[in-house]
Image (cartoon, one colour):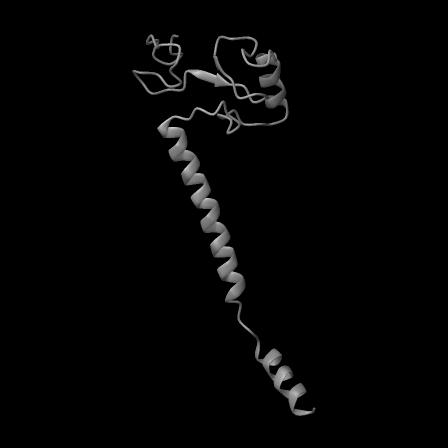
Length: 119
C-alpha cells in the first residue's frame, strides 16, 4: 500500500506509514473496517465511502479517525484515547469541585439561624 503523503511502500497490515508516520488507511465510520484511501467501497460493509465522505462534508463533520473501530488500536491511538478520557475525567472533577465549594451568602446564613431561633 502506497502512502499518499510520501509514496513509501507499506505492507497491507499497516495503518500508519513506515516512513513518515501518516495515516494510510481510511476507517469506515459505519463498521470500523480499515480501508485503503483509494477504495471506493468499504471492505467490511460495502458502503460507498465517497458518498459517506460527501455527506459528512455537507453535514459539517470534520474528517477524523473514528473511535468506532475494528478493535485493533496502535499505541498512538491508545495514547490519544487515554488523553481524551483523562481530560474528560478532569473536567468532571473540576465541575464537581466548583459545585462543592460554592460560597454561601450571609443572607442565607442569617435566614437559617433566624428561623431556628423563632421555634
